[in-house]
Amino acid sequence: MDLASHVTHWKDHTPEQWARTANRILLPGLTFVLVIVLAQQFAALTWTVVPGAPATFAPARPSGSLAARELSADFTSLQESHLFGEAAVAPVVDTVVDAPDTTLSLRLTGTRTVLEGELADEATIESGGQQRNYAIGQAVDGADGATLRAVYPDRVVLNRGGRLETLRWPEQPSSEAAARASFGPIGMVPLSADTTRPLRQVIENGTWLTDIVRPALHVQDGQVIGFRVNPGRDRAAFEALGLRPGDVVTDINGTVLDDPSQSLHVFESLTESTQANVTVLRDGAPQVIVIDTSPLRDLRDRQ
Image (tube, rainbow, N blue to C red; front, side):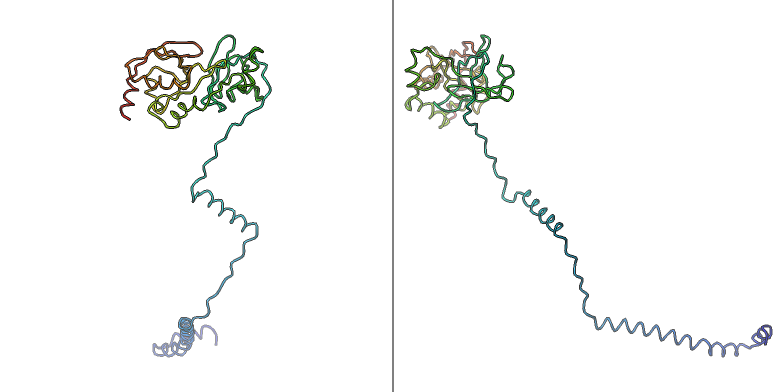
């Protein structure tokens, strides 16, 4: 039977014949598909009710170098967090420097010292006939760029382009050899405990005077000539007196301040009058200034 005969045969089928043919062909196929779907659903339901053992996965172990880096990073971050606070930095203490004598044309004429043997922090140096006061770190005039490195009662140390050099007190006549042997290096004044006790008490106890003025013995050419003064906590009151940091007070109302055991009482007596005539060495030159002592009285009364 050729194709045309088949087409004519199917074309002549009635609807009832078409329905019977469809049932005969499609029903087995639909049944097969339905069985497959039901089997799949049943399998999924079975695994839901009876779960299997959970799968475990062992993580890969990091290499030794990676683990070390991670551990180091952990300790670094822990240290930087400062859980117990930060340790205080120990102050650097300037030790005594033994340097060769300088060849510069300078003359040491004064050092600032509070008690014998203690490190001072200012010096008076003469250069080219001019005297000036210098603090640590300042460049000295006529010294080829040298700066003041350290100050001691008997000498100063200069930093000359990275080389340390010593400037000592001028040599004294040979007749003073005995005094040099008894009293130590030239320029040091032998101060007994009784002499320095008033000054020590004023500084350590922090009286009303030291709130405005911080006094320190000033030695020049081997003799105490007065007190070098610097501001205390109340700098405004210090400046109101007409004083400047580094002034050397040598005379108050006619009383020469060359006796350390008595001079501090002269300072404290400033509150007994409204004005005082004060002689100071400022940049090596003496000046007389009249100061208003009312700030001192006000501070004393408040305390």
